[in-house]
Length: 201
Image (cartoon, rainbow, N blue to C red):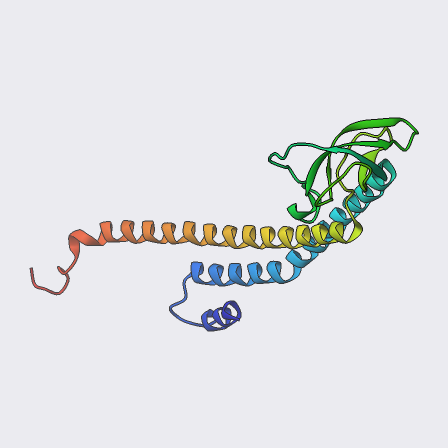
């Protein structure tokens, strides 16, 4: 609104400078780009991210399986590293030695994190593995992927808006510097004769 009112105010103002009108047009153009182009860019970026992330969700679902594991024995407590793709560190309770069967039928044996508070020999729990039985993280779910895509869209829109506003401010700053330079040159020309006209000197 200030840009529109500025254009209207400077439209026939006798004190209007060319740079004043340019600044007002720049402000109006920046507002239009932010209001129209930024949401469009955000929507395109979000849709692109959604496509890539949902494809990743499908790939992970195809490549990862949830299998049952059996506790052999509980291992000594140590600093547990929770799965970064799980919801919270509370999911990681105990480090155990366990047996499990890979999706391809291979028998597996190793150290895993069990979601059991007090694991005992023979207890069962679930883990995520690849098709060959290697431990992997929980696959990305569709809702989380959509959330990431929405955030990517908002981020792209905000970045574009910031670039537009930054460009506008840079142009205005350059025009202000040019205006000061013209004032300095005009003052250098008028300075030696300032106050002499009409003084009788």
